[in-house]
Length: 155
Image (tube, rainbow, N blue to C red; front, side):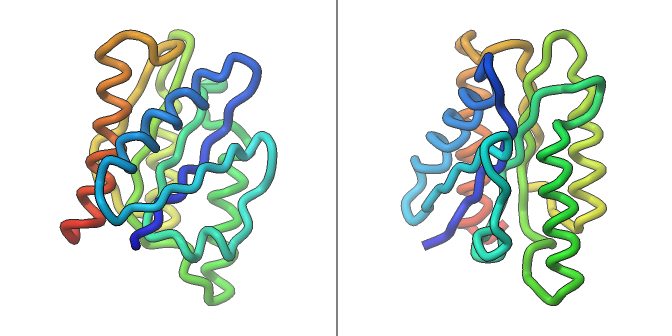
């Protein structure tokens, strides 16, 4: 069974949490995919968990055109773990972002992913506010489907 680790930051409004749930839904539509979700606003990702994942889905709100600090910490952690010999980088990933009118933090997420040698598996999904509109819901679910397909079909 292939494992997708969804690492995201979400607070009071829960927009990014809702988007993470939709991405997870899309991943779970594929046979042979297990999904684990971790809100880094609530706890830090254990590097054993990161190492066991076959792919990552990474989500954040847009904070001043940058990802949330706790998600940045995840990137730092996987890079340091990799330097220590752990298989935490070089995996396929997708990114998703919620914002209140900016949306440029997705570029920061992609730069961090590139620095940690993560490999894009599908185009990112971006949503202004909560993913309530039908198109935002479908885009989020499709992102999960695309990541799962990347894993099950070998990229």
